Amino acid sequence: MQLNSPLVQSSAPVILGSLPDPPIPDQTCPRRARIEIDLLLLAIEALELDGSEAILQTSKELELDEIIKDRVVLWRLRNTNPLRRHNQRRDLTLTEAKALVIVGCSLARQLTVLIRQLLIAHDQLTEKQLSMEHHFRLNDYLERFRAHFRSRMNPRRAAVADNYSDEKLNQLALNLLSELLFCTGTYGIQRFWFSLFDGEVA
Image (cartoon, rainbow, N blue to C red):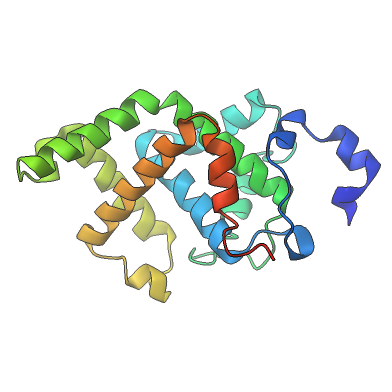
């Protein structure tokens, strides 16, 4: 209700307008969208040594720090992911979701060269039937992603337990790399945003 008030609209960062509001009930993010946004940021954290700090710094640069104010707020927003160990039983508003997506896609653009290199390395290793351990940077990304996922997600959730093996987590990490690269393309951020609500819009 408050998000539609003239005062909030006039003070909202202009960049949020690049992502339109989908016609969904209550103007809050559905479950799948909350999971996908958090996993995308998890992949960025596996690529960046201090991913959380990079998220906060980028939020400030994009003038989104009134929404993503500090580490505590970022933690609370990301814990709206129902797969998290410390899931916050609250909604993720569209405004909050837009801020997280814009920041995530901005960081993905900064990491475009690395993301491409890792995906190419994966294709080359697969073609030669070699394990990921043969490429230090790719193996490091996969190890960090697995560690992040296991430390932050609740293994009692079926969706987490089903993806707990090294093989499945590696595949998830690689899928997220492709998704990050997709976000860096022309209108990639908008296409990713709309994909979050596929099947949710009446």
